[in-house]
Figure 1 (cartoon, rainbow, N blue to C red):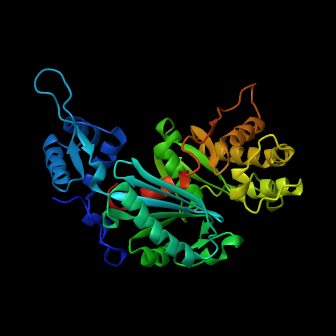
Figure 2: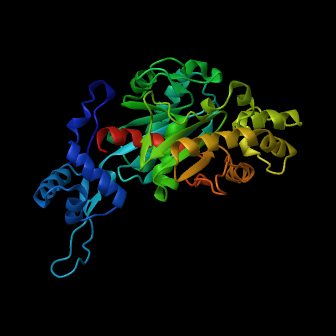
Figure 3: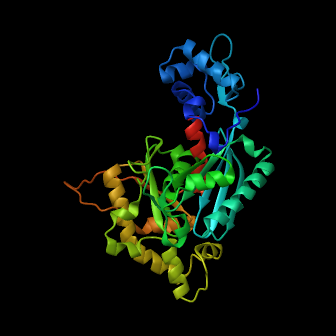
Length: 381
């Protein structure tokens, strides 16, 4: 049987056409464990071994899972663990920033096959869609598969949702992306199903699979780029909230305090005011100098707002960790952490326990990585 091939966006079937609820449970477990026996699947899910055997057989028939190498399991025959069939399907994730694009291609197991990053004027969404169409074919060719093997494209954009279906109120500098049906626009241009997520939530999803989520089941992710956003992961799953805007941490600040929140746009302004000539955040990052006096000024100005944000996140969510990531250089993220503090009001010389503050472990393309998981979550997990 040929590996799974997805239909174009115009004929996309309901997700149940690909996997039943129990099949999704198994695929999630197999993906999380990497390799797991049928007996362990039965124990983990509470399903009978007979049901597991039948479900696994169906997944194998559709080339979604394969048998791994035999491993000893005590007396008798070695067990044959089940693994995700890596090349069963592929997905592309795109992060659209105000001055750059980041793209990743992953397979069903989460392995990264191709990446692409470039500075690009994204002010015109039609121009971006045309460029993405070319890049899609190019990256698929480099990874060794045809675009028809793509389950879809996940796209991360800055802004907050104002409707249920891919309508985002983007930053003013990305006016062409605001208040329009981006899923239909990009889906028509690419000939594939498209899912839209805000960049902070996408980055949190990427971190949950490729970074802090490997060690922390629940965390808040503070996404620092030209603006400031974020996302939330609870018990291993991204939590979007009722309107898809969970993790919009700027909303926890009073309006008159938002000018001093830790954004790279503020850093760009301070560096240029001190004599720099960088035209964009992307160019600033290419020539980033951590010893610049403007960096010290930025840290001093943003310390209070970040402390307010992490204190609110800790008090409301009580997560294992708070992750600082996005486009911010890791060395700067660490300095930001070192200068921030949780609001502490001890009672009887004791305060509640606070989450760990850590730098993102998934890298600057975290939003693209998270976006790439969206088609798989829809179809398989």
